[in-house]
Length: 299
Image 1 (tube, helix red, strand yellow):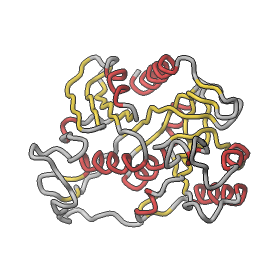
Image 2: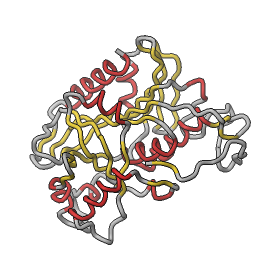
Image 3: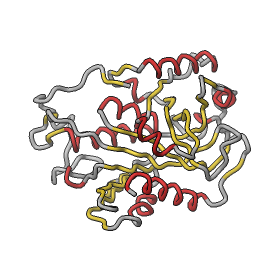
Image 4: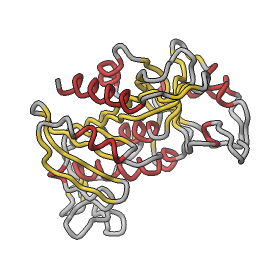
């Protein structure tokens, strides 16, 4: 995914558009530029931040505002920020916009910088598997994300030829209903996917706009369209399968593509939707994921 247009350096961003706190930090994340590492590990659960930073050699800075909790520190000489985003692509819209502002906007002058800085953003999440041969407690790395949300529709973007081919195949095979939002495809950063995908399941991830009905769960309210999960499981495009459901990756990948950052999602499978199984010790599996990712990225 690529931007059609970006705001030009020198353009003044008004206080109603770029909102800063009295200490100069960005509005939601409550971080200033010096608080951010080049590697940002994003998690949905605020409690997972401390599980990551407990592995740091040193914690330099901690911040918290609402669900946005951040710990920045060093590990083996690498400066890392562990950041809780909360759940959903609406929160990711906030997080990605403010992370980019921290490195690519002069916050004092309120204008985009001429020199671009690319962050490495890795989501460490949890997910539900949509394939029977993807067991609980194993890891899924997202090569592409299928956006069932609507965030990227609000940004001027164009999809790559590969993304459009996958999307067209999905729309045809799923017979996508007209009463649901049009999906989109966004790509992960290929070198990161290759590094983190080795020995793990790699494929297409569906990012849902909710946890219950949007993922085909039925409690009392009944989903508007039945059989979507079966269509997801049955989807094939060349060697690509739709492996899992989660709730953030499409916006991370899409906005990273627009803003020039390197992004990858790794998820621990906590549920297998076909087997009707849930992990017996998902926290231990999440710890193994954290250790594997840190080992591969910072040694």
